[in-house]
Image 1 (cartoon, rainbow, N blue to C red):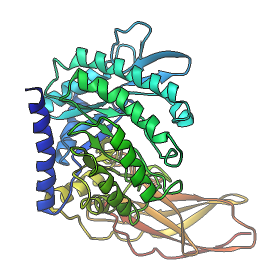
Image 2: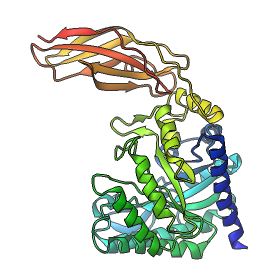
Image 3: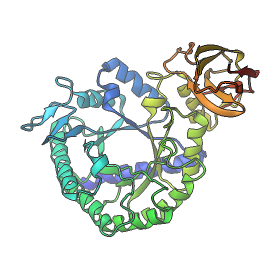
Image 4: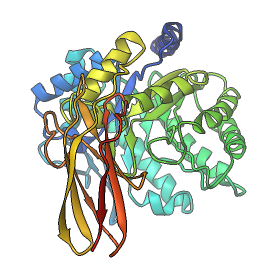
Amino acid sequence: MKYNRLAFLIGLVFLVSITVCTANWPLAKGTFIQDWLVKDWSSEMLAKELNYLKEAGIEFLLFAPTAYGHNDGHYLSTLYPTKIPNWKEYYPGNDVLEKLLIALKKADMKIILGLNMNDLWWGKGIKDPEWLYSEISLGNTLAQEIYELYYPKYKDTIIGWYFVWEIDNLMVRGKGKADIISHAFNIQLDFLTKLDPNLFLVWSPYMNPQLATKEEYRDFWIEVFAKTHFRSGDVFAPMDCVGGGGTTIDTFPAWFAEFRKAVDTKPGLLFWSNAENFVHTDWTSATINRFVEQLKRAAPYVDNFITFAYPHYYSPNIIDSGFHTTYLEYVQTGDYEKIPPTPPKDLSMVIISLDELFLRWDPGSDNIGVAGYIIYRDGKQIGKTQVLKQGDRGLFVNAFKESKLRIGKTYKYSVCSYDFAGNISDFSEVLEYTHE
């Protein structure tokens, strides 16, 4: 009987995948959300957020981590009131975890809980296996406490665990590295299986094409999958790395094609895409056209989609509602609006120092709203602005600081408007300036 619920969840994932493919437009069914964003939110704010997510077709959250490791001792700071000796609360008196669980239960949504993270990971990686194994063991203790404290009350809300340790495949080349990764996994997987085999595990590594080829990645994962105790219904959900800059919209599908081959060597293992909806160069939100292309180009290879992260980059609680409005059109119709905004007008400048100036302009207009502006110098893009909170389309969006100007050189500036769908206007008039 214990496996009935797991079978239901696996069936649900495949049903979602089949439904999406039949409709010809893939959707993200889950999204990450992080503690620092929601720690001070009221229950009303959380309810509002979950309503936005449900409108967008999102059915579950991935909340990670639920505890932070420390460099000066073998203990964790948890996002809930811990009862383990020597462990601490990260936000004393603020049970962020239960606050989320209460809101999700009311909204009839689900959650996948990430375990512990330690920033030393980025330096140690798998170079110190014993350190990694001890951290994984801490995660097992964490899972045990979370399960005992919250699962009885929220057994219809908590559906799985998230393996927080991100792998960038520095270990692809090197004898024995797959052994280290698979052993770390098995420490956790074996414990979680014993704790409750109904709760599946999701893992979202990322890829770095500068370190290895897609074929080397494929072969590495085949070796790891062969040695790990992944269960039917566990999930391999690599980041597509389009937002993070590791890949591009054009190159990542070929990597996913190789990952599909690797996943198919492990019966019962599911393959999801973690579609990144941000732009790492300036930490702005990806326009909806790019995000939709990420979904569509991964769709031939994957069973489902999650994203990092709708609340952080598309939610009207955080950013201009134009992103949410535009994405909802895609959710409902499989397409998004194609009407470009008008170009900005009255491009002008103000000298602010010997080698700096401010460009400013009057805003363009759009049927939904202008998301921001792209600034060009001598025909090449040199910057971008983007709206932040709802209604905040003020001067900082309509201005750009230019620096490192050279005496005696003539510059030609122009600006385009872009909307939330990624439609781009014509160029503004050109402003020519000789720096003296």
